[in-house]
Length: 120
Image (tube, rainbow, N blue to C red; front, side, top):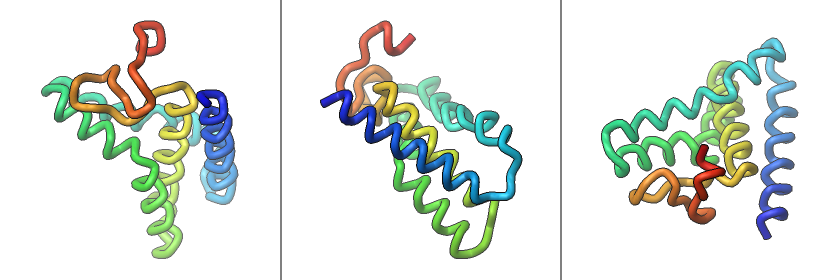
């Protein structure tokens, strides 16, 4: 089942690259911004509950989709870019086994408990 989920996430990551290709940004922008959503982990400096909330808001695919669609509807390219990056990053994280977080701590996700090797 894990491999099936990873393949599905890979397909959505490829979709995000396709959507990015329709924007008028240089190609280097995509990889340059791809890890920016991980700044949401700064919430863990406060505590696990705040960290999980910050992480989950930024890593929820619906947030990325809504940003992209709002940018598309209102013709705001930077909002489209934001949506594509959020969506791509979330897909990439899930492809590697990092899911949405529970309040118990970073390693407790909706995809299971991360082992020490995956979290490193």
